[in-house]
Image (tube, rainbow, N blue to C red; front, side, top):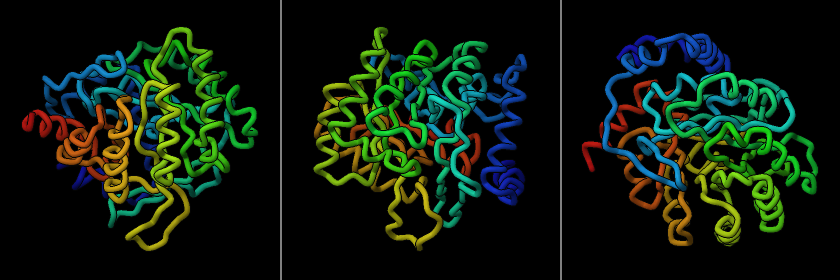
Length: 333
């Protein structure tokens, strides 16, 4: 395969964030060109039909989506569906622009097919994203927007900050995700507590007269009692859950760089969380973490996820991974 034999070795010679910027920059140049999406779709192979799903009132052509973090500022929205995704989630986007944490802040762990990031919500801000999305056609698949919080925002101001970010972007997204679970913004995970999360969701829903689905992204590092409280709160005030964000755990691995770990090492914990949360609630669940094959996706769907997402496997398996997963899912229906 061209990616495995030629492209991947070249990209892996670069710093991970530089490699991502090079690929994203090329895709951003191609995105507005007529026919670019059709050509990319042909190059990445044949997908599969018959995998349609309706979840929280939205129609998904297939259950495999792109997780937040790959397209933080919405520059690649016109092109990403050509890879076969049934939906795409952009962000995390913050209310005001911010640079994120100092570099280096993205690291590969090749022996584990994993990434570690401590990006810190680097974002061009909600207003620029809104202007960008307004100038391009809505994608052919549902578009999710993941909402983060600027560094240094006091907990008491978090509800209004999330609500303002939502209001700026409300007309452009089909669903929205409240990210209170990234490990890379100090104090953010404390907002998963019932009182703080309730206030955030109430503020966002008050700013949501169009009743767009609002989901909560969950940390894999929550204790069981805290998870149960979060799920109960989400059941009252949101329309779904994303399980899970990256982990700070390094179980079974040598200690490495600080930050959130994604990819294969997260698979077991994320699957366990989906199974556990499905017992607790009937809310729709998007399962994410360590999905690289059709078997991974099927397992997550079988234990209770309604949809799944991937990101790290794009880095290790390449742009054909989505359609390979879809063909495998279609064969096992």
